[in-house]
Amino acid sequence: MMISVLKRRPLCVTAAYSSVLLAALCYLYAPAVLAEPPDAASSAASKAADGFGVKPLAAVAADGVASADSVPAEATPAAAEQRAFYGQMTNVTQHHARFHSPYSGANSLDAGGSTEETTDITLYAGWRLWRDAELWLNPEIDQGFGLSNTVGMAGFPSGEAYKVGASKPYLRLPRIFVRQTVMLGGAPGTLEAAPNQLGGATGANNLTLTVGKFSVTDIFDSNRYAHDPRADFLNWSIIDAGAFDYAADAWGFTYGLAAELTLDAWTVRGGVFQLSPAPNGKVVAVDFNQYMAVSELERRYRWQSHEGKIKLLVFVNRASMGGYAEALQLAALDGGAPDTALVRRRASRPGVALNLEQELTADLGLFARASANRGDKEAYEFTEINRSLSAGVALKGNQWGRAADTVGLAAAVNSLSGAARAYFAAGGNGILIGDGQLRYAPEKIVEAYYLARLAAHLTLSADYQRASNPAYNRDRGPVSIYALRLHADW
Image (cartoon, rainbow, N blue to C red; front, top):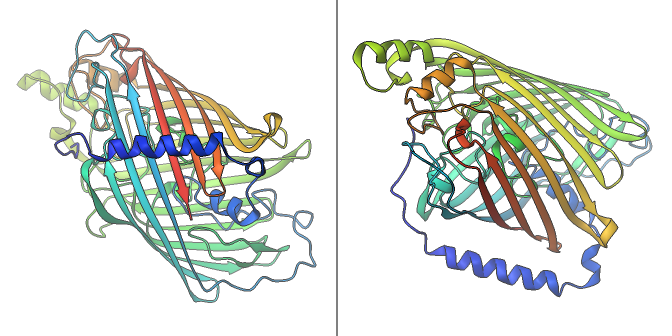
């Protein structure tokens, strides 16, 4: 069931464009000093906000290999920070023009063209409870809509757009969690203060437990170059593994418990998270009757003196879900379009993802992801992708005198299983897609962005995406999508 509201043009669109114009003027007249990278604390805060906020304590020595070489053994232990408060604001305005479409369905991208915006304002408030234990709350104000009310592409073009839209700002609490770290020795180091992370002493080896309400992708499937829609790429199938159908409510958060064990260059993670009562639903209370179990193995290494990471992730969702073949069989008997909601029963849906990040030079980095899930049943929380490949690069602006700027280029290819193709061709609808009929082809997406740092805590980004076969339909598109993103943190 798709959660949605009546859509009307938000009044703050004009304000958003004014903010972007002001930011552009700041960029043009910014002093030369802004070409320098932000200070260490600002840099750490930016990394810790990596997409959704939680910085795993496994990351030691600037996300490199945790070893005696990376952190001096004689380092003086840092004083433990007792409390901290941070904030951020992000506005994304997206537009796409008219594109070819001989037909459309309930979950189609609007072929007539559309402009929408989203805005979120977040407070990060943290307190130290006892030794190596932290409590964090992230109250947030949200407003706006994704394009076509966040439907129409499996790889949706904005990670800042939720599946719930609203014209007027509203308050919610997406995160409230406790993190406990148990130090296990190894090279000593300093954990820099950042949003959702109190500063203090740490070690290369540790066990970290996180419990409460947060996002699965706060801890799992992170990537230095493609994971943060507030600072790097925007497309869902580029910032995350496309076939990772992770537990989440319609805003992307849920209740869960995660454990991370880091020993030198290795980290193993595991977690159990609550699934929504029904696919793409709201999580209103703690109930683990339906759940996702996930684990991830990470290996950090150096290649020609440059840091890299490779991660293998496996997951399984256990819930009441509908099979595509059963829905088609029922529709053949009763007539009409197939509907997985009519054939739901308790079942499992497993998947796997491979995640690589590799620094190539001091300014250039590469990422790649490959993922797949069992495609005989409906997507439960994320999107209709059964197989996905994505890769890209990010380059800092040292070569043109803007060291704090970044340019990124990436591509993704998403695919459906045979069972899913038959379901959508017969007129079925899913979480994000459903054109009423389908002439199948893989969904192909190319994305490029340029992020300009206007001041120490202010960035402006321009983003372009080109989608061929949106929602796997060769009869529709291609479509070009343009975006401006303004982000401030404090």
